[in-house]
Length: 218
Image 1: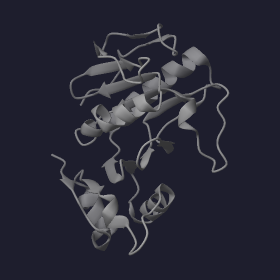
Image 2 (image 1 turned 120 degrees about the horizontal axis):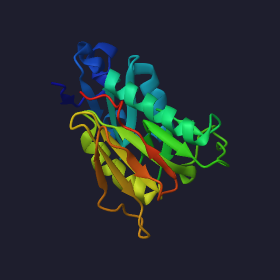
Image 3 (image 1 turned 90 degrees about the vertical axis):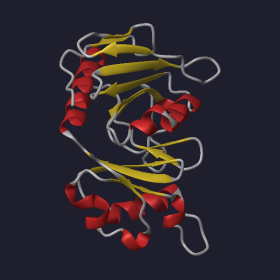
Image 4 (image 1 turned 180 degrees about the vertical axis):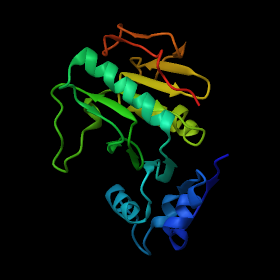
């Protein structure tokens, strides 16, 4: 079973962070990556992480905490199937991102959603990043290590940011959980759909039905 550990900069050799390939997820509190006198910005933190994180790991900053998890087959296959279904519905020119950094409101929230659909007229900002205000749909494929974030603080931030539709894909339970935004910028109680049944989103900004019959379980 994967474990969660905390490290300081003095422990950030690639072998330590990677956990020797055993599926370790490292969470680094922002205090461990601060200089002597200045708090690091999101850009500084990501630049530092690019130098020390081994290939094959997804890294995010959630509320100032840095977390990473290894990419697994079920994760990739389910993102692939969702991407194909969305492209089939909207066309190949639909604006989709996967594991691409988008900065969300709140204290140091640099997320890399597993899949995000943007408005047709979305443009990148001066730094070459997509704006959270243009995100219409987010899907996260959870792992045992990321579930707490995906069901908790990230869900709250997506709602605060005004993301209309949030889908959690759980390959362990074989379920999808669909949340839609209310007027008070919180999500509703959600709908649970078991793998094999379609996720009905025709009453949302997505306007489509997402098939799950080929979703991969763990």
